[in-house]
Length: 410
Ligand SMILES: Cc1ncc(COP(=O)(O)O)c(C=O)c1O
Image (cartoon, rainbow, N blue to C red; front, top):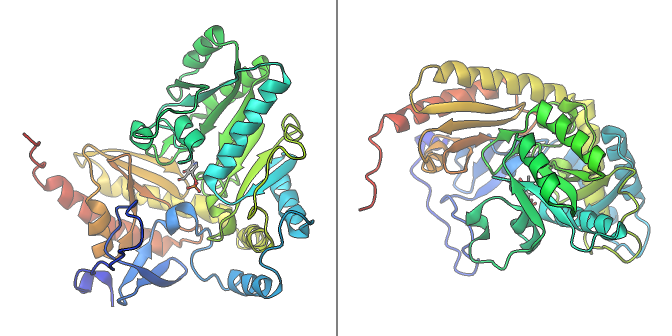
């Protein structure tokens, strides 16, 4: 049964779960590849992949037995002991990134929190007592107190002040703004940014900007810290989005797609930062546990075996072209942005309502920054599935744009 042919889903009741999310009235029960089914048997094409997490889609036939094997051996052991799989995954991440050392954690905010600690400690080691970090407007780095302070979205910060100090905010793709900060802020130690802003509305940093920021960091002895939590892990067609600019960061926090659904985060560091944190400076209970590490190792192995970077570039290009052709000349579609399988369609009005309408039509998507439809499917997406996304989404968006705008509240 497809969602389109079914009655509207009913919301499961959850009296004991904190109401921190505005959820759709459905619960997913299982999936295979890029298809998922809900508990009432409706089928959906998944163009969200758990928000850029399910790199290999659902129930991948090579990942499932590997994880079953690991669960049968050892799920968790603690960082009191060596975890040989940590070295395997760290070595692979260093090979792919050209960086040198990795700290493992479990989530994106945790990776970013660690990166912020590295930047501050790097400053203190240079006798800068009140280090400051340049961050961008519209950035999203997480929801801990420090990472929400780095985030450039007042909605995320509202109600949680006082914010953590030590951030200086500038607009994206504006190198003059960074130069101006350099002149007035002697305590800057790092620039911290997403190569493609995800939650901020799929806004890419330009290649020229990234290269210039790298140069400024070198010239000023600042760290370049690139948050690849959402745009990394092959999604753009290279292992990491910054590789399109031919640059290397000093610190690269990552998470989301690394474990293909098993929580894995990592702070990948280069020679300048690999030794900033020493014994006792940082730690976590779950980070780097054998199950998480096995998920990371197998995810990267399967991505290589199945050529998923090339697939993300090819099918992402087809999806983008399909959307561009279908939306050509449609008033209300402002821009289609992104790279590979990280795409955003910006409309001229808030469009959160499309989330539910797409699900009713059998398609899982996201809407971010109020008016940007966001597509983040698994990297195994086929050309036929990309065409299907266009077939389902385009009529919904056109119908939505043809509706009279909602009356403003008086
Ligand atoms: C770029 C970026 N950084 C950090 C985070 C936070 O990651 P997590 O939700 O795993 O804490 C996100 C989550 O959406 C993200 O997109």
